[in-house]
Image 1 (cartoon, one colour):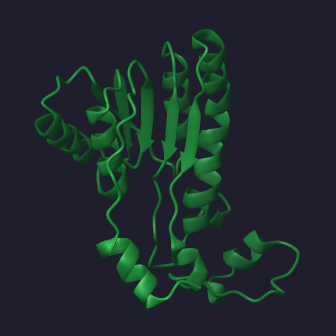
Image 2: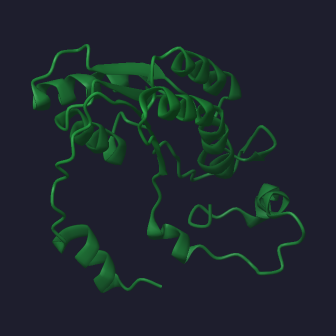
Length: 198
């Protein structure tokens, strides 16, 4: 388990060099890109010369505000950055996003950053909301975009990338080893809900 000192060192003291690899002429999707790590990731990718960066955002007004901020910081035109609606909580929204992405000439990078931390218990498509969004919805999107990434690899002789953003908070989550045969069913029980465990 990481110590408090590890946390302070990695979050505040560790100096990570800025990447310098070119992203030209790549098309990149960053989910959850209207704030936090997603927005900062998109800034770096724009700076590294991607031809198109798509900000997948649940809230279009926040997504457009992030787009303006990135454009101001980078000095690039609005054609490089696009904001597309994507609500990982909604299978319909995921499908619409995938259909739109499949119409692109290429998709080189998918950065699965969208996620939530729920403070209260609720169920979305049969599963506790945090797991539904952070696991099921995220993988539903990722699996449906794999064929497009493969197509890009074949058509452009390149190596596409898919990554999932996470955190070390998993290390503080507590649940019993004997949660039964189905961990999702265990989490659907409201008495097991804890914001830190989700």
